[in-house]
Structure formats: structure tokens, C-alpha cells
Amino acid sequence: MHAQVTSLGILSSKVHPDETRSLFSHAMSQMYRAEVPQYGSLVELVAHVNAQTLANDPELEQALRRNDEIARLGVERHGAVRLGTREELFNIRRVFAVLGMHPVGYYDLSVAGVPVHSTVFRPVANEALRRNPFRVFASLLRLELIEDETLRKEVARILSERRIFTSRVLELVRAFEAEGGLDQTQAEEFVREVLETFRWHSDATVTLETYTKMHNAHRLIADVVSFRGPHINHLTPRTLDIDAVQAVMPQRGITPKAVIEGPPRRKCPILLRQTSFKALQERIEFRGGDGGKVEGAHTARFGEIEQRGVALTPKGRKLYDKLLASVRSDVRVDATGAHAGEYERELAEGFRAFPDSWAELRDQRLAYFRCSPTVEGLAAARRDKVSPGIDELLARGHLRFDPIVYEDFLPVSAAGIFQSNLGTDEQQNYAERANQEAFEDALGAKIADEFALYAQAEQSSLDEALSQLAVAAKAQ
Ligand code: OOG
Ligand code: NI
Image (cartoon, rainbow, N blue to C red):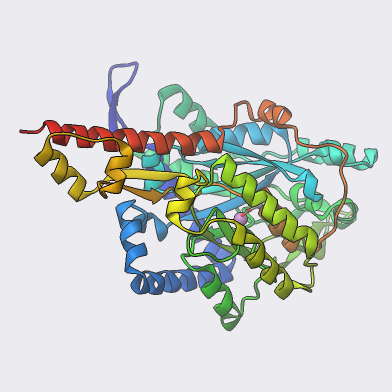
């Protein structure tokens, strides 16, 4: 908390957005655990595998400790929501700002036959990420991609009538924007109120007939439009060994999708590997024509786990995209999981072309690293009263580089996750393509570039390390 003098000159204590975010991510986790019991089982399984992995790999344990990643690991989650209108996107940006989460990265999923484009709301500053890196993948339905004009109009009308935020949430957002923060009571109320937006509703706002029409156009449209709000559709814990979790999931009665999305297993993990279990069939009450109710079902919510590796530079990402595309064009895994084994073999084979040692990844500028002085480096600087150049410092072991963890998402993986739990691998080809400008226009803000953020983190760690050595060299 930090004290702040308000315009009336009264001393008030504002809660730091990082603290509000921690309250929020905890509350979301509790809510989802109650709504989807498999999520609870998965969280326990991940905690167990993480503890074992750390016990078996002291080097990994030390590296995570050095980078303050151990504490965040147990609470680290991401979720996803799908929004219907520009106004919903605009307001959700304001809501997430209260939680210290800002839009990073633009994802065009129309290329994969999903009529949405997306961004990720997440903390941006190193310190904020260290405290609680909660992220939400937020997609906006692209109405212009619905071909049937009558349906498009009906969808627009239904969406224009709903309000996904309580009026109290919007009041508190305005207070936050005007006062530059919320006090403790307001922050707690905000978290309670904002949960309402993400809660599951088993009663649809539309008739089964309208639902079916939307469903036939694209299952995603039915999911976005039929309910009072954008239910959180999954909450994902971070594991240190995704293969181990994937292997034991069936023993806990959870069936994962056929292949893990992303790069293959490696000595030096890169980017992001993810796997999900299929969405649940849930009972829904649709509106009857005569004011009554009609029973039906809908599948939307699923579970997912992920393993995060080092963030890649544009050069590294280009190589990743190229290798992945080549494997995916050779072997196609369909919705039934056919060819999964072959895909995995080809993926491992194809990625031999991607260097798999930290030294090579750094030397070839394929990935981002956080720099820090070693204990020996600081002692030598104090003793010798000089701080030599970077190459020299590295050669002597006076500087250390640790991988910067990837905090973002991958469009090809996201499309695979969408598709597996829409229950199809249907490919519709949309004529429209990426339109970041239209997205930002609706959002009411610019989206931050992920590469710029990593490059900045790398550079500032280097500056800081060199300045620490310089200070040590001047010490008496
Ligand atoms: C979002 C899917 C994307 C991920 O982890 O890539 C995602 C959605 O299904 O709404 O969460
Ligand atoms: Ni996800």
C-alpha cells in the first residue's frame, strides 16, 4: 500500500494494483475450482509434479530462486474470455488496468478459422510479474466475419442488450481512474463485483433455436452470444514438466488432447508448451418461446496446463515459426488424435535445427537473458578496483545470464486449443485478415509489443549489473 494525498488534502492509502491482482487471481481460482472440479485436481497434480521436479533438479531450483520465480510458481495462472462487442473490450481494458494488467501482443486467429482477434492482459513491469503474473487471453468476436446478414444483425441486437459489468464495477473503475487508485475496502469490493462478469451462467439468454442457428454458423458465436457474460473458459497452472503431468492425467480421470502444442521437449525449454483437456458438456436452460425453459447442453469450459521457457528474440521466433510450420505441413493431427505419434517424432526431428544450449541461444541472439553479477564478480571488482568489458567479465565468470521467461502466448497453439475444445478441427477460410488497428480502436489503447518489453528487460538488467560492478570497484 502507498499513502497518497488526495485533492482534498486528506491522506488516504491506495492499494497497489499488484495487490488487487493477487486478490483477484486468488478469488478466480477459488471460483473456478468450485465450478469445475477437474481444475482442482489438475492444480494438485501440477503442484506435486513441480515439487518433484525441483527436488530432482537442484540447478533449476537455484535458477528459479535467483530470479524470484519460485514464489510466483504456485499462484501462476492464465485464463481466457471471449467478448462480443467493442464496448465490452473497451471496458474490460479499464477493468484490467485496476488490476495492473495491460494489453500486450495482437493475435489474429481468423487465419485458423476462428472468427476472433485477441490480446493478452498481463502485468508488464518486472516487479509486477514477479509478484503475480496473472494473465488473461481476451478475444473479440469479429461480427464482420459472419456471412449470413440476418444472423449478423440478430447477434448484434442480442449483444447490444447485455451488460457484462455490474454498475458498481464501472463506478469503481471511474473512481480508480479519477483518484489514481482504490483503497482497501474499495479494492475488496471491486474484486467481489468483478467476479460476477466471469462467472458461469447455466441459463442462456436466447432460445434453443437461436442458439442452434449461431452454433451452426460457428460454435464460438454461440458461446460468446448466448450468455449474460463472458464466463472464464479455463484457468491454467504452470508446470515445470508438462510431459510428466500429461502422462499421469488419465490416472486422475482427465483425458488430455492428443498432442502438446508448441515446441518439443528440450534441455533448454523455449517459449510455451501447452496441453488441455476437452471441454465439459454442461446442462443449459434455454429460453422457451412461451416464457418457459427448454433443457439443452453447451460445451465451453475446459482445463489446460502449460510449461514456460525462455522468451525468443524476433530472430529466434522466426526460426521457431519456420520449423513448426514445416512439421505441421508434413503431418496433420486431426480431432481424433490420428498421427499424434508421427507428429511428435517429426517435431523432435525438425527442432534439432534449433540450438539447445543456453550459451548458443545467447551467442546467436535467439533468446533473451537476464544478466546479473556473480559473487566472484563483485569480490573481484572490489579487490581489483576495475570493471573490465562484458566479454572479459563473462569469460571470467563475473557475469551470469539467466533465461527470461516467456510471458506471452502463441497464435498457432491458441488456435489448436480453441479448436480442440470447440470439439472440431473445422477450417473455415475467412477473407478478412489481421486488423490490429480496428482492434486497438475498439480497445481504446495501443497494444504493447512483447519483443520490445523483453529487449528492455534484458538491457536494463545488463545496465544494472554493470553499474553494480562499477559501484563495487569504487568501494573503499
Ligand atoms: C483462448 C485460447 C487461447 C492459450 O492458452 O493459448 C489460450 C480461448 O479458448 O478462448 O488460452
Ligand atoms: Ni490457455
